Length: 377
Image (tube, rainbow, N blue to C red; front, top):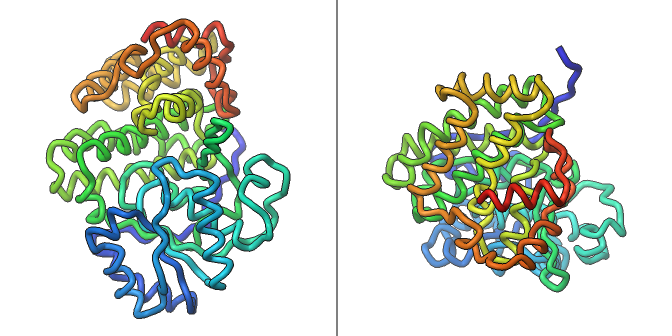
């Protein structure tokens, strides 16, 4: 048995209708003045306004100027409001982009600096943030329970994760009913992101016994329930199981971090506008096959046994299932589909895919081997 350390400082409140506990949570921490950080769509459909009313006047205004891939500027704009209005808490209501932006903004607001100073490691992240209540409306990133945020600098064309223990939300409230309004495309891309978190956490070099257990459970839930949630948006059982899968995968990858498929997803999203989950899914099956054929016998056995415990014949059978799910949900399958049509584009994609989390893959990758993997697609 290997040595390990596991920690999660975020309380998790899970269940249908839990959104109504917002006033109780605010009162529990004796918060006084808050900012709601959300999306234009949730403002338009009235969900954000409902949240303000539930807060019994404690939430004073809404900030919703955040792009699907939150930028450094989005984060600075949010931080400025938190700072200037002297808010003592924030509520993030939305998908991973909203939560990621909010987590970093709540820290930046406690400083005199811009987000870029922390994004490029020029300034240390060294003290607590403004407390954040995180409420996801998708089943995907699990940002509500992790210490990681992914931000984009469009000026330099860089998208990458930023992490700190000070980014953990104060409280995570997961209400599966909030995900019912997700369109099928968002259900698909966020759901496959959960599977990427689970599989990458399992084969990750940083894996440990507790993360293994949660990664396997999350993967099983996705294989069992994602397509139902995709085809039957109002199916609360499927929605609840996908919300549970998202949180469970988050409990795994929060400590292991992500790996190769996520590293490859960043340039696919930044340069080719592929939604994050679909970008992760693009290489997910290929890396599962590659890692299951590792020269390391222990890695091969782990992935084969994992696949069989989930009901597949072997690791290749599991990878084939991923590809079938992707096709059924209308994902892009080939380099040509995503817009990579020249050797020059492919070489640039390979170069930009070497984010730090590529190092977490059990099979060491270099530009030649990664190019070969891409070409297999």
